[in-house]
Length: 468
Ligand code: GLY
Ligand code: MN
Ligand code: MN
Image (cartoon, rainbow, N blue to C red; front, side, top):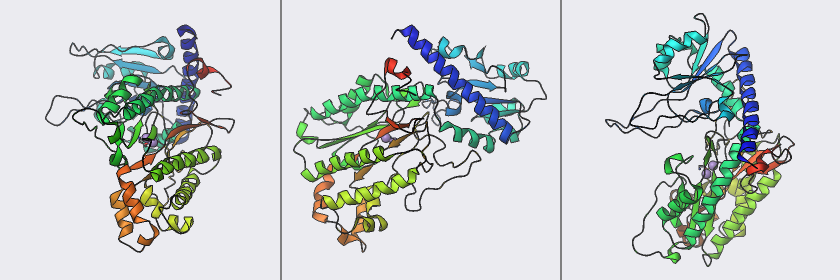
């Protein structure tokens, strides 16, 4: 497919994406903020380290980025029902940085674009676009900016409107699916390079660099800091270091690699975990890896729209209990292991979460646009997605089993101790843990598409039978 036709397809997808956003915002204003005439969305502000002139990495707010794919601070989107949205591109004179903003036609043609040299210029410009008596809501972190625009407090980040928009963000447009698919496809090249480096005996730093290089991404562009965990480190759920070894590579020193790393495509994230075991490792650990893969596969195959995601989380715990019994790690009945919190000690995180402009995307616990929350079950407070599965949601399925010292010690010290085979648990501790994570799109026809296992790339992104 030529670049030209690819851009035409993207332009069509983006145009329909934007039309959907306008409908959602119009309905939101009618339902929860009747009488509102406009909404101004702020991308966010740059923040500095304390007493320093170095800025923290910036990430535009999802509710801005969903409209305008420009990941820059102090950009503004003005929405007025029935009118072309206005993008206020603030491009200050700055000879220290490259302040150019690329505005390709595929998205730029959807906006009236007003280039400003400072945020304060917005005060002069805004009255040209909205009449003084207009009720304008302000969404975003720049409360001071809203106040300088004389927007009253009650119109800054109204919860009812934010809930409405968070709820709607769960339903991805075709444009968004194509970006999420792209973020998956690109990350996979990095995962392959990471596996190769693991087998060659590279340390965490080298594996991380191999991932970045192969997926052509810089550290600060990652959707989240990659988790690159060798051996025992893989039991630390959000392990943050990249350990460096001295001397030459030692392939035998690498027993297990758990790598949780994604990519971003125009703001849209992938979130993929793979766990690799060196051939010849402990046979029970190798069996656990296969078992977690099997559990993941079974869950994905059983997913259907209208089902409760929380039920799948519960089913995962039962499957984990079965696997612990099958491998001789635990004794007793599966349901008993679940009920007594023994599986929780091996799997303390949730089955997954919504995925989009944020890795843990908004709206995963909302039961309605009015902001009602479906809380996670008491025994699983970390479950981030409690919403029923519906068409065009994208979420992760990421079961795992970990040997976490502190959680296992809790069991060892109470009346649950005799449920576990401690010599085997001790022997498996040096292997850390396992997580296998894929990104799933619930298609409108009710089928699931695993964006990680069945990457959609290039022209396939636009084939109605694939991406419909
Ligand atoms: N990468 C963080 C997570 O899987 O939720
Ligand atoms: Mn995840
Ligand atoms: Mn992850």
